[in-house]
Image 1: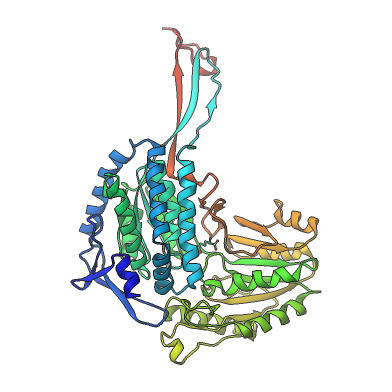
Image 2 (image 1 turned 135 degrees about the vertical axis):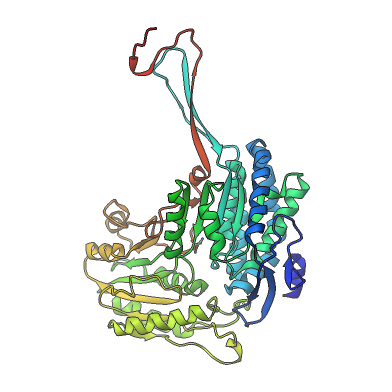
Length: 508
Ligand code: UN1
């Protein structure tokens, strides 16, 4: 890991990590980043004080005045170079993400690949920030709309995707002409600093201000500063519903904009017409991938009564064969949880669901021994329930999968929709009527609804996000870029008269 840190220019200086850039230089409390893989200290970072925050925002404001005037395709060219820099650093950055967060190396690299893909997407977008033109009802008038940047975009990201979700926001915001101030998770600060180095080098090479990309490491206070700051027109936040409600309320209180991507409680419905060969890998990857710490993780499996026992038995068998251990070792399927608090949450959730009548079919074990010295490794768990008890309706960020039996599709869809969250959902069926009902207006109520694909692993090209307690925001692909811009309607009169709209006469 030393070599990886060196390559990403992360050096410990004066009890804190030097960022090597001015746009972030915390002078506050020291934050230590421990790896959940082996419990080792990776590095220490100095958090930002309120003064540091003010400096970053001032730099961002100055940078915005310059950046908004750079033609969008030229901004796209700089984002293209960022994509190239990420390609060059993919191996090291993926390794750091994997070690600091605990996800498998494949997923660490996959996360960097998502960043590269969103760069490519943003480059194309930089020539396609289209507005509509309309026909004016008045003679010799022209009416059209154009999209302008907003200003400073505050980005609050979560530990589970330490770098990719930031890049979904930042790359789009940058081609749109905004500047970004990023508050990464305090559980994964080094991955963020590594990105900051990569981005700053590209900004320097292009002689554009470093304030285009600001980074502020700190705890929830920093989130509060961003949410309450009228100089930050948009706050995009990813994380728990509790955090999102606080951010959403604060930003709404000043009539700012927020883009929220919060908790999920994602279900897969498996009908009696499903191809079980593809169901099993989809469910296992969805439920245990990233140790159950994706917002898109499969948490509920709604099974038709005719295939219930078969699927249940196959799953228990596969779960008993899963290899749990160092995620940097590509032979392992499941890595650690982020920290021991997450382990406690896993244990508490299982205790509670047992008290609610849940039947543990597999798992419910915290692993110990040399390979598990960080204390963060748990056995993926399967629990059988007969109704959606309070614990089943709650998002526990751990690999706990609830199995529920159904007999009619209406009942299955009601179960799928019967939780407060609305991010991702899936149905496995080869029956076209079942699939279409699931996708119809009286089907899944989620932002993402898949057929014969699991709930996690969405592509960057689609709009990503969900309904209800998931927060309603859409990031990444499709027309999500509109979140980062303001629409202006322009009407131009090239006649010699001043006709009023709606035919109103006003003679003076
Ligand atoms: C998240 O967990 O916050 O769809 C994002 C997926 C990933 C992104 C997850 N592409 O699982």
